[in-house]
Image (cartoon, rainbow, N blue to C red; front, side, top):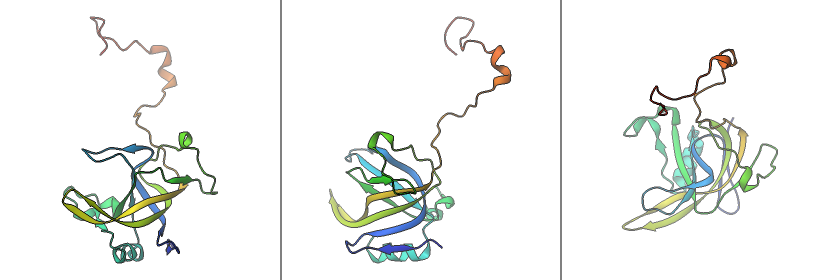
Length: 166
């Protein structure tokens, strides 16, 4: 069973969570906010959700979002302005250039540390993304096509009759 564990530094280890919308190789920039490394830590257990809530971190329910996303279950978005440590299942650290692109559904252990913040007229407590251990990687693949070798001899250049591409 997935468990969470608080360490002496006040951080919380979330074991065996599903990652969604992870930006661990390059930071993500939204609107006028500074760039951040981040990941949605999804499918939190009740115990994990309670511990995060007790630390002041808002735990959201994917079913209650404006556009419901029940596949997320209970989740948080952990962020950091600094690149988090990323390791594989054997605790071998990835060099920054070798961090894989993380697909939705990747199973990971995530270490977060609660921190208080203020931005413009808002304030709160969020989960600082400290480290990620990738347990089962789901490749992030934006290419919807597969190689179809049986049609290789029939391939035509991708241009229209006027010579313009598509």
